[in-house]
Every structure is written in C-alpha cells, then in structure tokens.
Length: 192
Image (cartoon, rainbow, N blue to C red; front, side, top):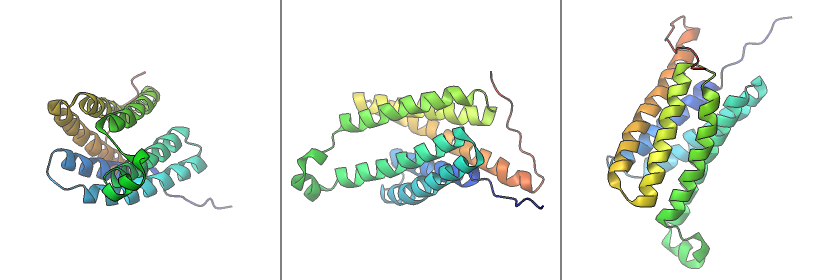
C-alpha cells in the first residue's frame, strides 16, 4: 500500500509567526501603522498559524501543536485587544473593556511565562528553534517591562530582538521548504 505524503504544517506556522512578528516590530519601531499588523495578525499569524498547530496535532508533535496553536491564539487575542481597546464608542458603551497600559503589560507577562515553558522544551530540539524561542522570550520580557515601566529604550531593544526572532523563524521555514528541493540549511543540534 502506498503511503500518502503530507505537507509539513510547520512551514505555514513559521511563515505566519515570522511575518506577523516582523510587521508588528515595524509598527513598534514607528515605521508602519497598526492596520497591517491587525490584518496579518488575524489571518496569517492568527488563523493560519492556529490551523498549522491543529495539523501538528495530527502528526503527534506536541511541541508544534502547543506552539503554533498557542501563538495563533496570541495573535488573534492581541488583535481583538487592540481593536476593541481602541474603539472609543465601544469602551463608552462597555466600560469594562477600557484598556490601560498595565492591562497590556499583564497580557504580555503571561505570554512571557508561556514562552519560557516552550523555551525550556526547545533546548532538546535544535539550535535554530532554540534561538527562535530565546529571542522570543527576551522580546516578550522586554515588551512587558516597557509596558510596566514606560521606558521606551527597552521597547526599542525588544523590537530589534523580535526582528531577529522573526527572521530566525523564516530561516527555519526556509530550511523545511528547501530540504524538499535537496537544499540543506544548517540548523545545529540540541543544547541539552
């Protein structure tokens, strides 16, 4: 019996994560408005990454299932946070929706904890994945500190760190896509 070859859902998950992370940092650095962040966050970084995570479940990859589904939900929830939190009429009608900087700080803090858990697990995988989660952890921590303290320099550092994270995600995506064409990009070994 011939086995049906399936695609690797990680390519879509990494692509969506990388692109949406990159465009958000372009916004955080003051280069672009929030609009493309919201659209990419809802559709590619959010929905497509969530689907990639659900497909990882079928492959038995719990790490990919947790990471892609989790960060897909992150992007969707962040976009809703921004959309509804900046809608003045909605906030007037439902004051409980009023968002403050500390609200965003707490939101980012719990995602920092989530990322720390996945960073520890990534240490058993390969260097490319470890570096993605290391830079993601540093970026979340930096953005959290910036939101709690208001220190813009920390936010700028976190944005540049997350640009590196996004590019690393695309590198790993390219590794998976190129491997099928016989092109081998190095990804390194595990750290523990």
